[in-house]
Image (cartoon, rainbow, N blue to C red):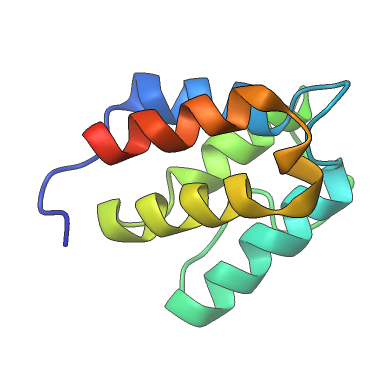
Length: 102
């Protein structure tokens, strides 16, 4: 699906929105979601457990996402945007629409 990587700036942008302090995923939910994809794709995550060794949950999500291939990142970001907890944040709709343009 994707031969070229999604720009790191977009991954950071998406992680900032998806892990937003007020309306984003919780730390445990970030680990739960990314760990499930890591098992499915046989990927080693830098932050496989919570509490994680990262300064904040945005960084943990970004670093976990960077461990995946381009097509896997695309799928994971799209599906994280679709989670009911993320749908309450209107910014996730913007991430989803921008993801289609990549």
